[in-house]
Length: 111
Image 1 (cartoon, rainbow, N blue to C red):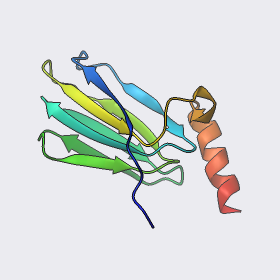
Image 2 (cartoon, one colour; image 1 turned 120 degrees about the vertical axis):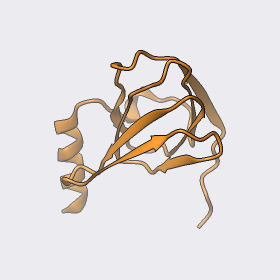
Image 3 (tube, helix red, strand yellow; image 1 turned 90 degrees about the vertical axis):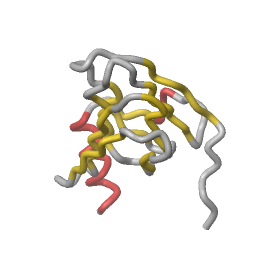
Image 4 (cartoon, rainbow, N blue to C red; image 1 turned 180 degrees about the vertical axis):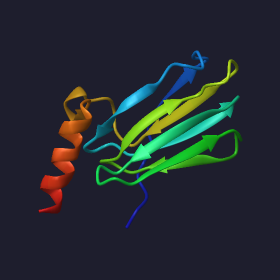
């Protein structure tokens, strides 16, 4: 098995502390998130009741997010720069933006 080729990326700069970004899942794309400056948190849900929260506060440490996980980025420090590396180019059709729809797709995959 080969690791994904993270050939696409973007930076999210300085959001207000109360802003929540993400709030979606991706059918195909995998991601690596790295706070290259400042800090933020990432909540990851698998659609079956499990969730984890990661604090990104070191520029040499990131978190890998496989496809088909729900992600929410929040609690951004004023100096936060979040680097998002993606395994695919942006395709709006592979995004799931409603959590209930995400849960339904996870359940269908398990059947």
